Image (cartoon, rainbow, N blue to C red; front, side, top):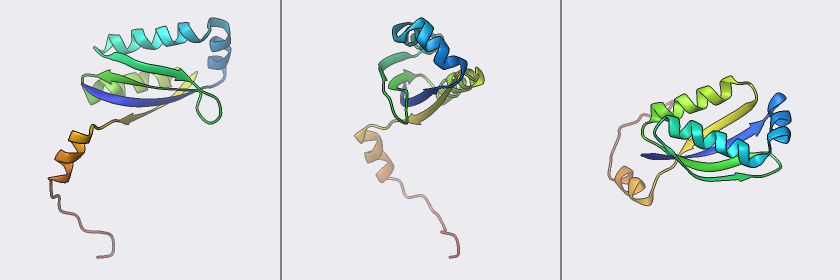
Length: 106
């Protein structure tokens, strides 16, 4: 399973739907969506300012995360951004690798 940080904003009819349904029903809708791809919701928080909602979920594959993002963004009522999260051990493993790269202009 891979963990993803999500940040979302309600837009247009999504704001009206949130006001009508309330926060817990929208969280429950995300729980159901994440479960539908074999994942689970770790945490979910509302905020104000630049981001309306943020949290963390686990899903089995990057394709599952992409499917969720596409499905949610396609509604036009919510914009969601995902960031894959890495453990310190993941970073340890990455630091052991030596990819080759040529910087632009070199």
